[in-house]
Image (tube, rainbow, N blue to C red):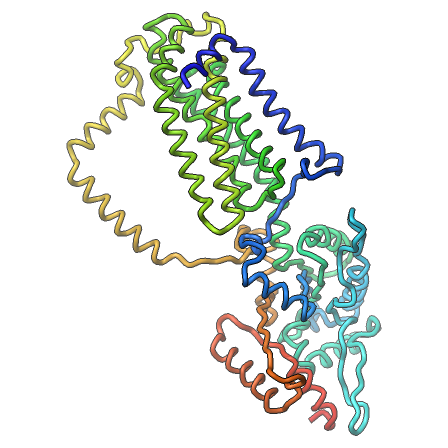
Length: 538
């Protein structure tokens, strides 16, 4: 390991070129399939995965059951559009608003396209839930029930618009879901072929919504779009946070060493390490998940740690040797072993995450371990090589005047020295304080409550959070939970006794979860409504 840095000192240009070349080759392998759209089993494009389901392995029993039930009952991921109007006396049930709703529903049904594999993606039009796409059940004569569209065409008067509300409120399935319980708002439920298209569909819908004039407030929200939007904004945050982190690290390094050119070597190590690590993650076919998106923020500060030790020791020793080559040789001979040990322990620590049965976290732990090792290799070669390529005159005012007494030569050193003496002097109170903090921390940890709501990934001012809040205030709820019941005999759910059991179960669920549930929907609502209309609407 010592010889590695020695070789870098002797051939500095070669080792810097080697590090840059390794990184560029990896990034080229990432860029080719991503930019061209052509890839093989070896070359994979950048894939983003923000689906919380994929935190579990594909064959996890709960995922298997979920897929089976969604297929059996044709359940799709939904995008929710909410419409409110606070200025009209009838709320959204006026002719102008309902004309826009009718137009928006027709537009939503048209949002379909073919992907690169020739499969249709987008909105599943036949499953769309809107006033113009749902049935209204009413009496058609003694012993007869008529099924018509709730809103076959846009109303021409406000009186006709109010009829839509009246009809919807007689349908238990629609009241509180399609229309708000107080009749001041409407919701459209737009089913999609997959969660991954929700962001694209929402952008198209928002563009269409912007063309409508009037006092309506139209919101677009839903779990699927929250997850997909997070994937898009995650990259935006990475593009912002990563450079900001690098700037902060650079500023701190400059403050400590006051040599811009020298501390730039550590930034080169951090940048190349991060690029190489993320490039390897993509090239090897792994998706960038919520966890793995944080790899750069972890790698960058870790990548400069060993370099800081080198520059710190170099700073202390340079005036002793007055020769950059002799100084860096001395420094590397002294530090290579502790740096190797700390690197190995750090890599093993992150690799321990591989023991967790959660694929995205395994990828996170594995590639941070890889990134730590890459950073160590670049530090052992690039930093000594970089120093050797710097002119000797650049070190004219570099280093401490009195080697071995650096703790007294700077303001920070004096502060840390006093802090150390204070720790010895007040050892017992400090230990007692730490015990109190530890006990408080244990209590605090016991109060933690898990929350996997993707909406909470966004700030309260985010448009998705705002839309979600508005819809949950006006409707029975914007989140769905599904319960599947299975009987031993075919056709059992036509039995009045069993249907009564289902109805009682619904009442029990609502009565025991009034704070969190708005309503339940089952086949019983349809049967009750048909039965009512068969008997003169009673």
